[in-house]
Length: 84
Image (cartoon, rainbow, N blue to C red):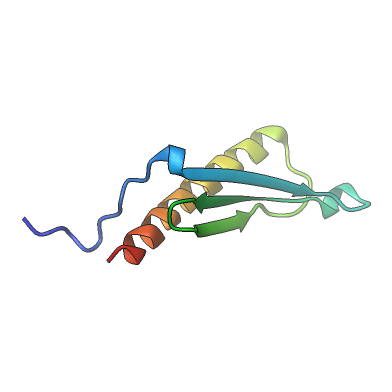
């Protein structure tokens, strides 16, 4: 059976490093944070940022989780394309 070209690979979590950052300005509203995922075997990376400004802790956790899921999917696609 031929592989579906839309399918994505399944990455080994041990092969992916997750880095998060937070940059704060002089005002609370100048805060910016983001996440970077790096697939070490291929050197492929993806990153994204959360919206700037003050966020409730629950909103920040939710947005970080959504961003990390989206970035994981993006990384799977990029790694799969690289191995074609």
